[in-house]
Length: 120
Image: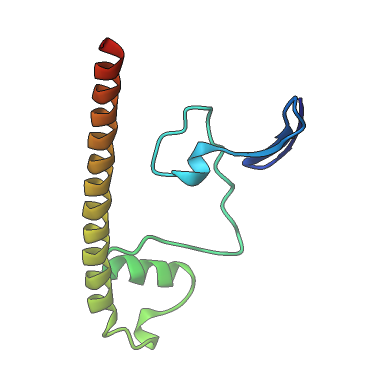
């Protein structure tokens, strides 16, 4: 069996000569735990600075840390944006949690159905 590997994707030919593409599961479903091994995090970039801003003080600290004075910028609307973003993130998290529970219920139902079918 011939295989070529590039990053998270693997292509190859099986014994009948059919080409197939295998994608690692964590690329498709990043919210699930990776069972095939540890994912190595990439090193932080010195060129691009990032921060998780959850409050105005986080933004002020980030700006000061990168040699920008918050007083020099018009930041009146930022508080509202941070609050709106937090609400959107909370709603998205709740939606993903509900969706995950729904998938688990469907999976459990299918497993029970499979057990019932095999038990007959």
